[in-house]
Length: 422
Image (cartoon, rainbow, N blue to C red):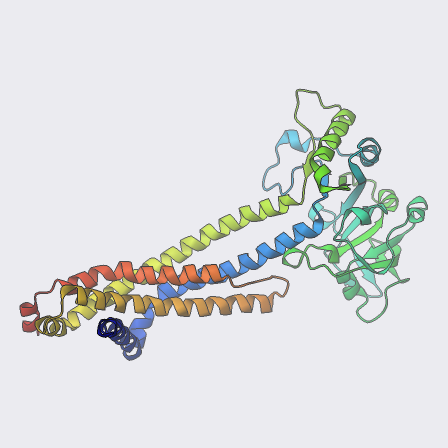
């Protein structure tokens, strides 16, 4: 029991000394641990954003469905220069989707769609009685599109019908953001909106879908009959095909069937690679992992610099502390304190300093993540207990590493020389 009490006393005393040093010399101590605070804050804040977005992306992929894949002419997320041989690929045709539906036994639905958007150099101008909305996507779809894209849920009204397709009607199904922008206080159903100079009757409104980072999402989309789209925008040839299988276990088989059909229709030689892409929703996870990998690396660099600066600051303040308390060390050794006692005392003081910095960094990091979510409600943040523990452990480790030299210097002081020190 006595040994336990001595151990607690050995830890308690240097902790109190360190806290007293922080209290009495707030500016010096604050500047000393500032690097640690910044480093830990960066880790906690970025980890909160990434942790929240990881769950969001996983939910998005799950909502897109494990029974769906897409066929495109170009690979997804092409950053920078697109190689000439890829850029010259032939466009997919509307008939390709219908051939897939007819010829692939594992495929339940296959539907083509085309999109007009500023991303493709084709901005849309949408308005209703003086109200305008920019940044919308106009997509031409078939009725079966609703069955392929599980994210798409009609909240009011109806979706595109076969009759709309056959008669090339100028009707549309608008996203939630479009409704809020053009019809903030009235029912949009039956109203006619202007889309790029043409009048379209609103026949349906989609359920709200925030999307990743608040956009683009289905909220910004306006769906019209594909036949109407082709009539109004004949110059837009970029075609995408959505494919759905009845059972997830048939997905790979269906992809093989689709590849065979398209290679045959597009005349791809047996010794040449596909001149089209098949993409599953997992691509979003892969792209997100690439992005977060770079973000984590940048955060680690910033945090490492902060922790290094903080560690050097702690080492300096501990060296000053050793010099200021040389006589105290001499007295302690003279009355029987061992070298290990002095070593532990100064190590605990250093760890306490960086530990306080770690706690402040965690609090500030949590505050930053809260502010980010408050300013950007669609950007999910979620504090990660794992990264909080890691950040605090690293801050304590910094104190241990950078406090070792000053602590060892104090422990090696000769008691006689220390007592003579003025």
